[in-house]
Image (cartoon, rainbow, N blue to C red):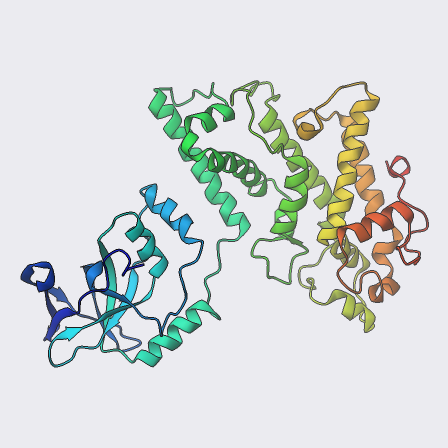
Length: 427
């Protein structure tokens, strides 16, 4: 990519004096000597300096980093095109010979470099190691791309960031239209239309704000039982499972046309009602299944194996652990939706099923939901130790549990429930 755009032509004219780098670019008719401070990396003992160099003096190190440019460069091109800054500069290294001419070899950040070159940038900032041990750089770069590979923000952090971006866009919208600080007479749809250059992102920010306001609501009683990092062994629910079930089923996935301020004072605002009722359902489930029942000191590590080996664990803890498995959670939370829909149908109320939680739930419906959750959590299979070596002995898929709840047994004929789930009996 560098060669294609006229780069990788020259060696850098450079000498080291005391703790300074002195260099010039005569091939570019820039004969003035520029001076840069030389820094020391205390831990590695390597010395380095920072420079902004024309691409004509930059060369790709194919030994330390042989990775080719991949399709993801298109995302970086878009990022820089939107005038967002480069957060990490490229890394290079040089060996200073007696004649003062050296190749600046780039071994990290080549995607960022190439993306900017494609956008017409001719000079790039680089951190350059001076006379390093090349094998040490090779090892460090290999580890950075394998065992130490950076982990992306987990989903919950992404939602928090999306929420912050949503708030920023709302403020920018009001500022550019000259609206008062407390004026929310515009809709989610208006925001998407206004920021039409990032309409897809704007929709995600709106939904992120809904998710985040529920997840991090101070009154959220389920929060203490959610593993936000995704790798812990102390909590029964992963944030990923919450997204795939609660938020996927119960949050309306499109933008609204009603003003953000619509019926806020009366408590009938669609989005606010949706958030408040999802939170209420979450708290109901926390009270019936987790609070005072799931023990984080016991955690989730190898529960079924421990049961098979004869370890005595509290049945309430085992019950909460099993009900929390994503493939099980996915199935029984869908029954929640069916119970809600059935209630409104029996009342003769026409509803948009995709906006289920934007309709006010009356007290009798909440009573039915609590009764269902309580009865479902008391089904005998959750505390049946013998099932630890069969249906709970390995990871099952969504369809497996849907069949069990519909038929009372597995597709292989093993009886799991005394009878199939009957939602009318359970409410």
